[in-house]
Image (cartoon, rainbow, N blue to C red; front, side, top):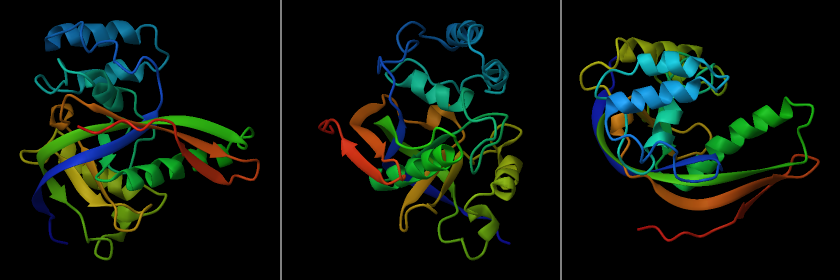
Length: 235
């Protein structure tokens, strides 16, 4: 199987995260150099039960930490406080920045994962979850997996990320091969949608911008309604 091409991806991307307040990251303004920020993250982790965050921080090479502008804390959280089972192209060792190039795809991606979790929970439905849209402008070279579902279906498996994690791991470790900052790939949750997975925190364009606030509302039978709570004008 041929290696994927590189593609220059310039796009405003959309990431939906569970809403937290305040919307300004606690470390966005208190540390203006990487050494201080590493210390701040490690101190925060002393009171955090997800102790793997400190281990992950040590896997981020010097010069790669996002800092100094609004949203830097959110970016680093994606890498340090990711799911222990990983995502499609990231494993337990270090998270990644996943986002979509349109908000509809971002919604479909997050709805799928939240519904899967809720259906596996005894408390499942009814339920409601507030989400906020994070906008990041990116301009970076990525490995292009678009249009390769037929050639490499294992990378696009609907539920099993074993093959895609192994494929990405060979290109990420040791930390990020030259010219390989992540992937651009087709969404399996929304036909025609495109996602990105960034391996480098510094490749996520700062400052992040606040988009809309949404609420996912499931009734007792698991039927979903999506409400827009705010309508923030995009710059």
